[in-house]
Amino acid sequence: MRDTFRKFSHQIATVLGKPWAFIVALFIVLIWACSGPFFHFSDTWQLVINTGTTVITFLMVFIIQNTQNRDAKTIHLKLDELIRTNAAARNRIIDLEDVTDDEIKKLQDEFRAMRGKGGIT
Image (tube, rainbow, N blue to C red):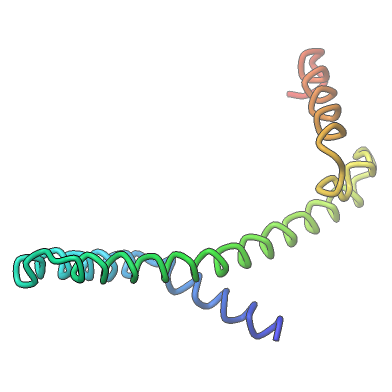
């Protein structure tokens, strides 16, 4: 089930991330707007676009979140591998995404101090 959803999410995100998908959505909105006079700008006419966009937005949140979570995990793993193989790197930075906000702030301050001393260019 998990792998099926991953494949589905990736495919949907890839397809709907194209410029033509935006053009199709814009075309649908234009057709809806142009149909307003025909339906006398009724409450039902407004409800059609409101319901459609709400349902699509609700579903897309899960698709986008899934693909972003997966991308973030893979980037973290790649960076961890680079840190692990670099002799000059500090291994305590591996799995940095799992530390507390206070620990991140301390590390950020440490890097700022290094930059101020000329340690980072």
